[in-house]
Image (cartoon, rainbow, N blue to C red):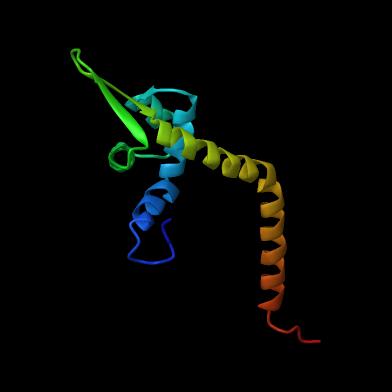
Length: 127
């Protein structure tokens, strides 16, 4: 078992790839089945082609995503989850579901916090 709290642990690299800003979204998007590059890019709003390419390279190297090139002109490339990636994506889906179910609660907590901070930082009133 890896100790990702240890900076020398090889699992730290996998942790970084999986929990990066885009890694989780790529894995979650591929849960629905194989996608071509442009469809994956369009599915994940805000990701640049450069970032998608970089993250896909990492996830393919980690054995979580399979890259398939269909010989044609131009070549067609699609991406899908490997069995290892399927297991991880299922676990990530629970996290994404939790976020979806509790976003309103988190936003309410943020607003309460911001009000308390702004009240604390106000200069004392002069009466």
